[in-house]
Image (cartoon, rainbow, N blue to C red; front, side):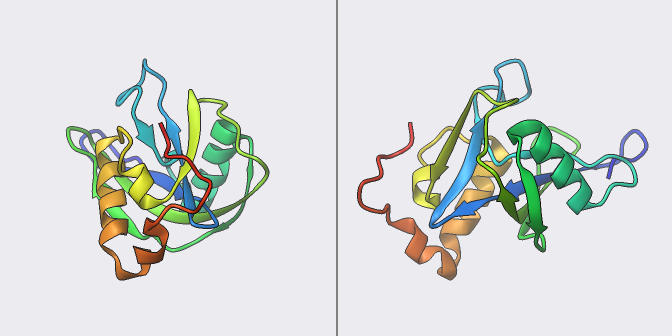
Length: 148
């Protein structure tokens, strides 16, 4: 949650899985980390829970409904900002649309690692690739081209 000036600001980042692929979105050029790829989400407002923030942000950004929000997987202090990015597994209903982003991409952690990711998102993808449970998701399925 956002606090008084100088405090850290909690930002939820949705880890949305479809089979072995994860969803990332390209940030608009005019925003911080513009043109880089990120996991969708946004800042928690004062008094807002992670579930509430995730539901609000994903509806605004992707036009989807959140069905379930899991326990945080990793928190990364965003370099050069007051933001603490909290990566949270999230289950959605609906087909994501880039309402606030310039593009969407589904990819395995190994595929996502080849993209120009925002710093905290890159740290999270590295974390996923180091986890033993991430090993099966590292190989790209047949018929999928690498994200560009």
